[in-house]
Image 1 (spheres, one colour):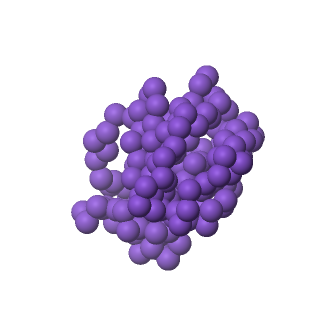
Image 2 (cartoon, helix red, strand yellow):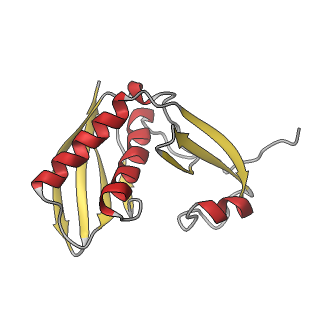
Image 3 (cartoon, helix red, strand yellow):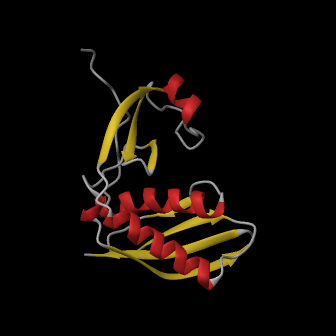
Length: 153
């Protein structure tokens, strides 16, 4: 078997919150028909993601995001990876955030049948390892909704 060479991963990250970021991205896509976060800052204590939205989510919509996230997390979805050639991956996934020097083979991270995307980060093995998702605050300015959140085990 040919050795798979991926780009080096230069971040230290919290696997629970990094996996949660994937779930939040997919939840936002499903609920708001937007893209994945335009920027994110993931930490062990609290994290934030920015989404391009045409209007600020209502309190009811924010509650729905939190409830949807906790429902998905509680399902105990398996988190697993597959390797895919970049040419095939670009037919399925948005690769615009990949660095110019991305390897020819990509790691695609799947969270059950809920989400899949290219990622070289570190993840949990099952969503039940995440704990409870809690939105701490949010703000909206210039078409960007910033949500600050944490997970509690």
